[in-house]
Length: 201
Image (cartoon, rainbow, N blue to C red):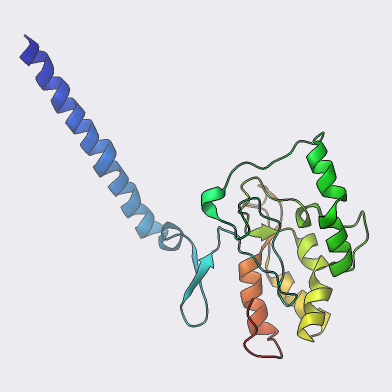
């Protein structure tokens, strides 16, 4: 009697393990690679030489004046994906209020030539994941003068590059317009090259 109960249970367990642990993941992975090869591979971004320099889905740290800067990251200094986590603060949060009147705002006023009250919120606050690769168009346009000055270029030329990289809402109504910082900086190096060669980002 026990044998008659154990055998079907073991067979069913092995069958389900094969379906859910091997066949289904294999099928989904195969379809993803066939239909969306770039996304399935991690949305990797390559430079002009073909070298992988990042992902379009994870922010990178840019600190030099010649480049557009991403929003602050709560996932370590270098957008460490192993430290990602929720960082949203509610509208009544004292920590959020401190952020919006603290050193980050003062830095934006000093380096970007903005006025207090005119600093885009995503310039001084991190995203929910802490890994957001995008900034708002307002944030990008606020950095145009600094980037142009640092590159010895005309602001209009830098603004043109930003205009090319403003992405609309997903499907026309999800989310907000945004700019991918890595893609923007790569295009910036092509369109408005640095006067001194070999300056790292």
